[in-house]
Structure formats: C-alpha cells, structure tokens
Length: 524
Image (tube, rainbow, N blue to C red; front, side):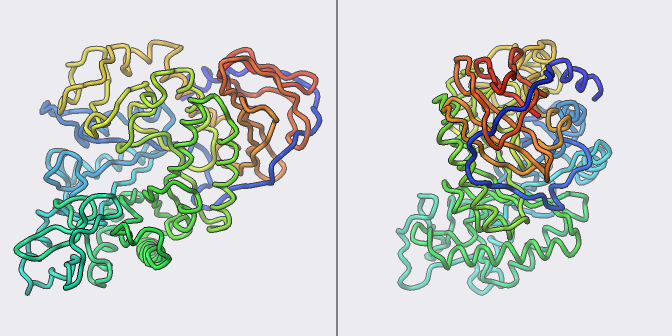
C-alpha cells in the first residue's frame, strides 16, 4: 500500500497560489454523510465480480470462490473496499440469475466452507463482501415451483397465476411475454419462462425471503445487491409508472431492510432499479439505502464521448437534489459506468482511451460508493450478446496460463497487452490510472466522504464540483476535451493550489486554472 501512496504522491504537483475570486455556482445540491458512508480509512470503491470468469483454482476452466480469495491481494492493491459477487447460489444457468436453492453454493464455484474462507480473508483485508440476491423470481426448476405445478400444493400461491379475464398476451415491464402456459394454466414470469415470479402478496414468501437474507448475513456476508428490485410489483407494462406499483415496492423493501437490520444494523443493500431518471430512482433511496445510479452512468458516457460537460452538470445537480429530497441524509449513491448487462464502457466510447480515463476520473471523484465492473480497469472491450460482456478476466499475457478461466472463448480481439500482468508493468496503462484515481479517495478523504456542489465555470468543456464537509472543501475539475483549457475561477469555489492531477501540466496562478487535454485535477 505504501508504494502506491508514494506513486500517487509523485504524480501530484503542488503549487502555492493566491486565492482566486469567486465562481458562479449552481444552487447547492449535496449528499449528506450517513453512518453507512462514514469511513476512518479506505477508498469506498467497490468491484463487481462474475465468479465464473474470475480465476480458476482447480483446473476445470471455471472461476471459483477460492479464485476470488486467491486474488484478494490484487483487489487490495487496487484500493478496493468491497466486492459484489454476481449470483453464487445453485442454478441451472451459466449466469445464476435463476436460483434453485437460496441456501446453497453453486457446486461449480465451490462449497460453503470456501465461501466462509473467502469472507474471513476478505474481512482480514478490510474488504467487505455483498452477494447478488435474486428474489424477484426463482428458477422454474426450483423445488417450490416444481411443487406449485400441483394446484393443491401450498406452494401454488407462492407464484402468480392468471385468473379468468387475465390478458395472457400482455407484455411484461421488460418488454417480453409476461404469461407462460403450464398444464393449461398461465404463470407470471417477467423475464422469461425459466424465471417464474414470486408472489409478494403472500406473507409466507415475504417471511421466507427475509430468512434467506438473514441466513447469508449469519454466514458473514455484509449485505446484498438486490436484483430487479423494481420488478417485485412492476410486472406488466401497464404497471410501470403507477403510484400503487411504487408504493407496494417501497413497502416490501422497507420491510425487508428492517428484517435484516434486526440482526445486522449496518447491513449494506444496493438496489438494481433500472430507470432513466433520478426522479424515478429517488423513492427507492430511503427504503434500500443505496441504488445504482443508471441515469448518471449513461450521462457520464455520453458527456465524455461528446466532450461536453453541460448535460453532466445538470444531471449531477438534479440527481443529488432528488435523492436528498426523497431520503434526507439516509442514502448512499452507487455510481458506476457499466455492469454485466451493459456493453462495456470502453466499447461504448469506441475504444477511445482518453475518454475512458476522463470517465474513470469522473466516476472516482463522486460521492457514495463507486462500482467498477471487473476488467474495466484494464480496458476490456465487450458488446452484446450478454455472454460477451462477461468474458474471462485476463490475468496473464499468456491466455492459457494457469488459473485463467476458460468457460467461453474471448471474442474482443484484444491481445496480451490487455492483461493484469502487462498493465502492471506499464506505468502508463489504464490499470495504473485506475489505481491512482482510486487511491486519490484515500489521500483526500473529502473525495470519499464529502458532499457535492456543482460549479458552473461557464466553459462547457469543463465539469467542476466541490466536495466538502463543513468548512473543509476541495474543488474537482475535469477537462472533457482534447484541447487545453484555461478558466478564471471566480466565485464561491475557493482554490489556492493543485493537490492532485491525472495529467502532468495543470497549473493554477493568478486565479486562473490551466488544464491539459483530458486532464482531471483536485484543488485546495
């Protein structure tokens, strides 16, 4: 850890400069600190892992839980404070989002003892672990659903069945057929026939799913990523946007969170609410505590690609205002750039590494708990279909080196230079940029814990915001363009010197900040 701090310190050029005049500021829109967000150390950065693609320790070509344990030191060197494991429960599919046993480990990934060892070793390194919890639906091979084939089974009402008058041709909220025929009856499955929806109007289902959460907390998990959180009641296209749908979703997730907090008061929940407006995300912030910020992810990519910050400034201001209004001080934003369902960010940026570095710098200087998708820090490419977004992690230049996952062939066409081994040896690699930016949050705790206020500099090539706690503050400025920029800082954002910079050559003198192309800086 010390050598990375020294590496970062060597990149930071500090200038003693005069205070500049005030800048024009948008109305203050801030995220207040919460007990969950408070840190005494660390970076607050999280990392999403698809275990199948991660690292193989038994030679079967499939990543496993012991492989996650084996690579904890890599994650620690990167500066990761927490990991999200994509589904590890028993499942018939490669992805695991159709569970057949909520209290069992997928045998391809290992055993319960392996999971407990992973938790112990992660916690030893001060890395938290959350699991993907897929409870909107089960697998159609789950014993509950198999039993529900019988109309007389008590499990029949654990799922939703069409009644006379139901439009069985209706589309689900995901745009796929909602109703699926079985023995002359129709059951609800928002995502597919293989994923029947659980019926949360049944108290037995609600009670059971709280027990599932408690089971894994007792095993040492620190919390859960909640898959398809909005679809508990947002089942049909006709349900989307209805106040009743939102109310019932919020009621359930509030009940779920209370049930877990009774055994683990600091449990961390982060919901997948795939909506396009912060106003749609905001109602989920208080019941869940944290929600993935899909609208912000999209805007970061669009703004960096277009090299124009105006829409990004507006998105940041609107997002944090909406979240604060809905949840007060009781939320943690979860910004990210891409995940396992989305085309990889560098592909969306058409392979432009300058844009990628700026997008990463924006992500890693925002409030909350930023999430990185495995391989993002290497510059891995990936476009749909889904399997090509979830390809094996590249550890070595040699694609058949020991430990390399081989569950599917790599299709991106990238060579051995896109690997941990190669990029660790290259001081200019994207991996080293990510490592630097992540550790900025440890060097300057206001980047990790501070509130945010958007600053309008009058230059659409620049995105600027203050991060502050009380009277302590720093100013973050990103140059999204391929041209050097100079801006007179005048107004409420006080600055006296450059603390940190991603590209050598930034300076601040006589109230003017000068930035190289695609540079990010933190000023005091």
